[in-house]
Length: 289
Image (cartoon, rainbow, N blue to C red; front, top):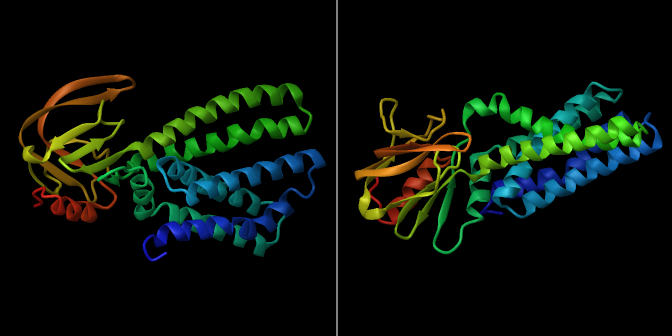
């Protein structure tokens, strides 16, 4: 626990979700029919189990599951709070869901999940999520995942056969697409390897790019006036500048399934833990400004 306090905090908070939210959920669906109520209970428990697995075994996929699950928990808690439930139960449910989301949103938690996929003498660092996505597309995608999975089964449980069948098929398709989009954010990372540094960013680069140690001039904090190949995606706080001794060719992503080749000797990117990355890079004989 001393080594990974955020990881253990996420596990404890998520494990307590049935306690913090259970009473409010039970009150909210108490007037439902037997079949819809049982279906809702199965969906909630299934979501909790999947989320628990995600935080028990940190990984990029677990990070996506934790982010999505905690976001949906807060949405459900907010909806339930406006129903016929006691004030205390509603407040407890909201507090538990908000705490789970706050822990999962911490940079250290994301970094631990990303680094769990490292192998050999690697050290992976998560790239910061673009702020513009956090203000709209990401919450919408989370809602699409939840609604797409739950709406169809609930309609079928209420014996709305045609609507339920259509919504199940359409909802599952939309949920899969939204899940893939959310998971792409957990595949953006910088990795320190024995012979240098590599950047894996499917949203900004067409392929993983390795920068050998002998090609790197320096790595250090970026300021607002620095220019170069920009992989920050709007996340400028804590950005780093990687300067090369000579221009290298990069395959830049310019849109959906489109890319172009560009030459650059300066790359801007924003890891979640910039200070830790600089310290580890220095230990690996990379020149740090």
